[in-house]
Figure 1: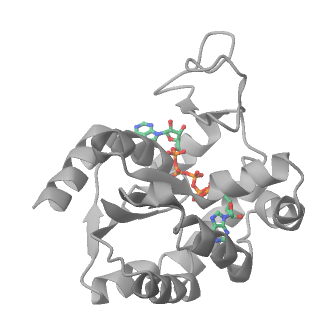
Figure 2 (figure 1 turned 90 degrees about the horizontal axis):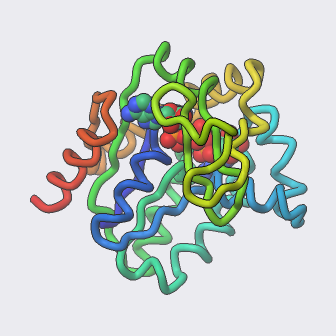
Length: 215
Ligand code: AP5
């Protein structure tokens, strides 16, 4: 499958993307994970991105497009990809359209996860993420807890809160989403690709995505 997952911070994009990779070998490409790994490794990209991320602002479009132009042409994308957290602005969506046309690929669908704001706030403050860059399993102390010692159940690394999980950064990320990313729903509606799913169950979302792809 070749899909984009849209949705507010905490809507469950990463959780659903990880579940969908088991379906047909499509790879999850999370720009958030790529950037967090770069910050951890203190690369040039990481040093540039860190301040924006910790404030809950978007990283400049140019940096993201440079990453994605290269990433989408790597061999593991041949089986398909699930874009998690990209595109996030109208200029990124327009650039993605040009890039995909250039490499001869069409998107199957753009899935918009529609989750109420109170649920999102609760999920973001209770999330824990595996600190191992090669794992990054997503947990939630209410719905999917790590081990009682706070360790990842897959690799045993500590499951921690992210640097952008302060109240200030969460508030800013939600404002940024409403201003810059929410307009992408209308963009993809016009392209005839949008499918909005208003469910609180990741299993139900996965089933609906699979049904819409295999139709
Ligand atoms: P990014 O990592 O993409 O963060 P985000 O969009 O804010 O999304 P999140 O990862 O917070 O949430 P999610 O929707 O994946 O939810 P999750 O599955 O974890 O981006 C971080 C930063 O990087 C940005 O702020 C920006 O600075 C920068 N950036 C990234 N991409 C960029 C781009 N393209 N352009 C510019 N800047 C960019 O779920 C949340 C919680 O809920 C978890 O605890 C989970 O266990 C729980 N949960 C999920 N589903 C369910 C369910 N069905 N029931 C109960 N609990 C659930």
